[in-house]
Image 1: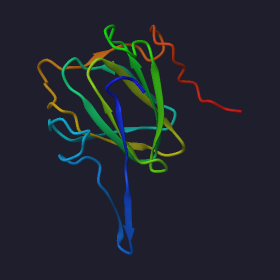
Image 2 (image 1 turned 180 degrees about the vertical axis):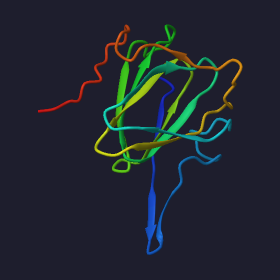
Image 3 (image 1 turned 120 degrees about the horizontal axis):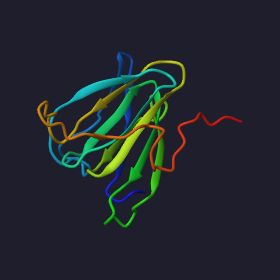
Image 4 (image 1 turned 135 degrees about the vertical axis):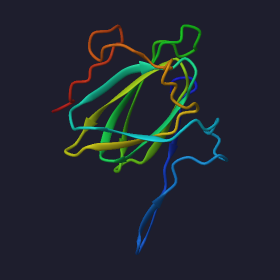
Length: 151
């Protein structure tokens, strides 16, 4: 696991009315601080990558559909510099991923339906000076292939 990345398996609690799933609590070991909560969606086969933050940590979970998440440790002073982590998360594998600053991250929508992702970053979005540093999903120095793994 990349240094500083944490995962939390999410527990779904069903009853005759439906289901409940807690994503992040302020008494979780994974919790740092609250910035905001937002959702983003990804269509099947679409890649949303790569970016990192210098200040904020992300805490996201896919609550509808499925995504393949990839992380790359670009922090030169990290004991896991250059490592890649990959996760399949969503309604078939409910999980929260905590991503600290300096980790490139992104995902690909997999399956047949739009994925809905809830993110709880530690800082609110700064419209004047976004803490977001992007590179092309395919043309870069990250040794990762977004092609669908078949066979």
